[in-house]
Each structure stands twice: as structure tokens, then as C-alpha cells.
Amino acid sequence: MTAHDDHDHHDQHASGELGEMELRVRALQSVLTEKGYIDPLALDVLIDTYQTRVGPRNGARVVARAWVDPGFRDWLRQDATAAIASLGYAGRQSEHMVAVENTATHHNLVVCTLCSCYPWAVLGLPPTWYKSAPYRARAVRDPHGVLRDFGVTLSDSTDVRVWDSTAELRYLVIPRRPEGTEGWSEERLASLVTRDSMIGTGLAKSPQDTQ
Ligand code: FE
Image (cartoon, rainbow, N blue to C red; front, side, top):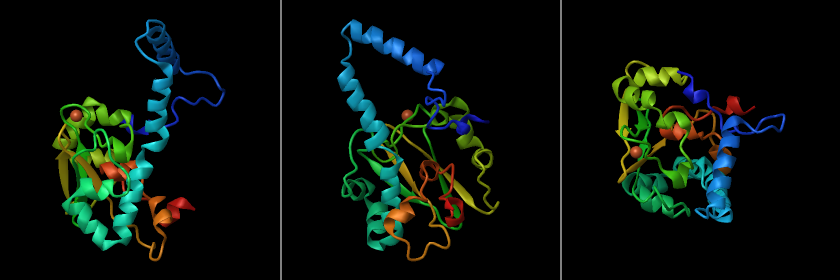
């Protein structure tokens, strides 16, 4: 499986040329605009919101706060929706959040087996692979195998719990805090929290990864 190699910059070609997908999107947008179905300005606001203001940086700040503040962590585990909203992250697709915490013995993995339910307010738009049929099917059947495909090797004794997102419930994985980060600021810690680590298909980066 290579679907997770999909990077966020797929539509930015070094040469400045437009990729095929971008051309198709532009063509579609032109037609819809001409026919009066969409207002391009409103579309820009929406895209900007989900690309820059709502995204995995929000979730990373939630995780970093949980790492440094045990009171916040407890709140997050008991009422994730409220704890997350207290940091200013709320909205569509994140009305009912549940935070699940990785430990030395338990790893959490999030999938939506039915479609692509995803916590937009804290993670932004879902990656392409999250919506793919192979991920959705295998995450449940063979979670250890899926994790290996993502480069995550857990000991055989680690119990992987798979959480099935629904329209009602969205999950946020709290990855384990990496070793060697004692005394780090929240902001610095947040830089270690990847999108995938909050879905469970990755781990938080270690301090060495950032050098
Ligand atoms: Fe879904």
C-alpha cells in the first residue's frame, strides 16, 4: 500500500504547472460559477479555513496541552468535546469528540468503516488514504498489518484498539509523549505531533526526527 505516501503538497508542482487534478478542479469550478451554483469567494473562504485555520496543528496543540497538563488530559479523556472547545477548536464534524490515549500496552487506531467521518476541527481535511476502501477494510481486519504499512512497528504484545468513527462520534488519538522531551514548551511539543499520530497510523516524532 502506498496510499499513505500521499503528501499534502500534491497540487504544488515545482515547475509551477498545474497538475491534472488541479486542472479538473478549476474547470469544474468555472462551470459551477458560470452557472451560478457557487460563489467563488465563498469557496475561497471555505478552502482557506480548512487548509490554514482548521488543520492538524489544532489537534497538535490539544495533544501538547494534554502532555503538559494532567488536569487538561483528564478533562480531555472525560469530555473531549468540551476540553477541545476550551482551546477554541470546535465546529462541523467535531461536535462529539472522544479522545483515546496510547499507552505502553495499548495503541489506538481510528477508521471510518462506512465512509470517511473525521474530526475536521482538530485535524482538518482527511487524507486520501483515510477514505480508501483498503484502509477502511484492513484497519479492522489487520490493524497490525496496516500499522506496519505505515512504518509503525509495535511489539506483538501491544493491544491495538480500532475505533470506528461515525457521524455521531469522532476520535482523536493522544499519542505517547516522546522520550527526551522533559521540560519542553507546549509549542515545541506540538511540533512533534503529526496528523497521522492523531489518527493512530503514526507515532509522535522523536526529538531526533526534528533535527
Ligand atoms: Fe464516515
